[in-house]
Length: 180
Length: 416
Image 1: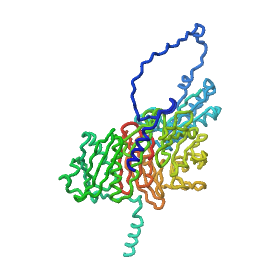
Image 2 (image 1 turned 180 degrees about the horizontal axis):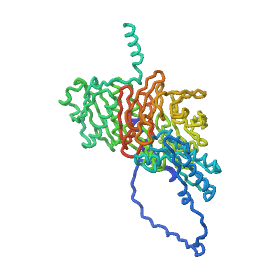
Image 3 (image 1 turned 45 degrees about the vertical axis):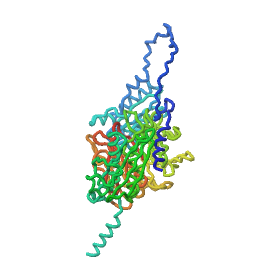
């Protein structure tokens, strides 16, 4: 019986196999290293861009998604709190203005984060309530709620890992992530 | 005077089996036990690894004063080695290397020069030696006639944060000596065993657009998506029969507790409070405990399923943000300091719903994620202290805590 239990542990860990590349990689214990077979690779395809096509319209001021994203602020919160203070409200108003302007064609994912004090569900919920507070403020500024989605990363997505007050306050934040 | 005395005796006796009352240190009264290695196979490093693992396990069963000296003997010697002659018990074992990397162990327990117990063990891979050592400790405990330490043989599943938004899900033994990364790559958190047999589990994937609960069948190596929810999606607990899940979902940014029937694949909202309701755990088939911010700070409440009866369960502590229940007992995490500017201490406390006693189970650091063993004999938890993550085991009836550190990364959550 005992050896059966141990055997089943071993078997369970052996049989796992991989998934598609988008799925998390599931490790398999059975490792057989095979020598790579030398193959001739195909000729690299090339494409010639005509002079006309290569001209980029210099007049266009359209910013890329990542450029806009970099301009969007991070919204910071007080310890154990999820209400938006006046200073952060200004930042949200600025973000909402961008949402109606240059970012109007994108959706946004609000990522709620917490400091390191706890990895439990409550901390995740706190991160989410922070994201939700920002969402409500954006909607109040006239952003369509259907363009805003939310996720909480709890304490698992720190921008700073020092044991200082400044560091912890940097981690108690909501980030804007643009989606096409 | 007589009446007062008998009243006192009556009260003491009536609380005698209450786990919230601390057990006085009884180290001196424990019998002594020495361990003798009689192995011929294997090198010194391996022998020492096994010896250390066995000593740790024998300590955790909390029945002996275990001698930590490594001594060798011949397996068939009729008497114990001279240094161990005053020991109450001597455990002698021999490891034998088998075919294809298998490991066999024979052992005998000697008491007053007589063999009182013997048994042999075998694993197919000698890297799994720690499971043999756990099994030995389990059997010695059974032989001594103590309440079962079944939990010692169970597997722990945990998620480990290795970088921002990067994590691994790992299956381990309870001491973390054996670790197998079962899911790597991506951002996956909150693993939870799906059944008693521990051959499948749930976890939350945070890689997609919305958090998704996934189910992994380990034997069939099959991953399926169960449910998604905007904002938050966590499987907090699984009923004993594996048919009902307690979920935390956040439809419209509102974290609430839901029950999910795995047969009908339908969910039902259980809490309706506008703040935070999370971390639901089965207390019994019909009652759950959970964490709610309905008093303005996180605290422990209970709800009878299929009714609207909600009851506050804990009256001590200003911020109690995680809990687990077993029968009448609730263990919860409480913030002991409230400081935005320096280190905070979070301790675990044990209460009984039948008495007013509160027992503090930990002393320093951030202690969280308490989970009762299925038999209620032990509590497993995560300790983060001075940049070190460990798994802790609390033996409630022995008043002892054991820590097993994680070599790298930070423990995010776990289940056993």
